[in-house]
Image (cartoon, rainbow, N blue to C red):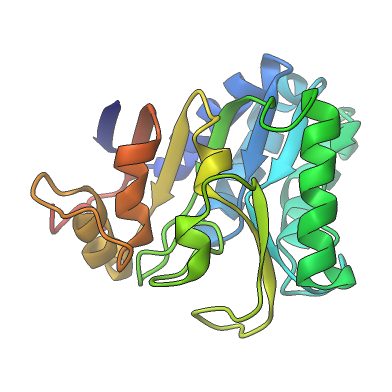
Length: 236
């Protein structure tokens, strides 16, 4: 296991470059929701459009809403990345969204079946890069402190009947079993409101605890890069 904490002036730009390099391999990559990733997607589309032609895209999690709902991670990615790429002449043909409108249980089962089908069997898929954010409570994907999803080690996607933070709608999330199949996990966090969660997850003396889901990455993922601005890194 290795963890590389990078404090940079513009984490979104560095993230856009890392994402675009991974997309250019044509291997599977996982996108996430949130305000910081949104800017990274916009920069990737504006500055690295040609890299995304053969990209194979999945999602770390999504809310159980329709694809045109403002709470949908897919809608955000479509508007900030996919549509700008298309306008630049790069259409991403492989993008598997979570069908949250079917409900958390059915959508999770369907997503796991798709991962198995595309990956070549149960547990066979490998991700070139997984992008994650961190919530102020330390959650990653839609795995919240103390919830059952944190102990799942066989299924790659599970339903989350009750979210730990707003919006309080059911969700579907990838699990640590899936994250462990990433060549690299890239964690992006910006702003002082993330500083406590980053310290609780990645400080040298931070305990590995389900009270801070992001802290468990260190035990379960081989290669972690944490991209921060000075504010988010201020309590490390």
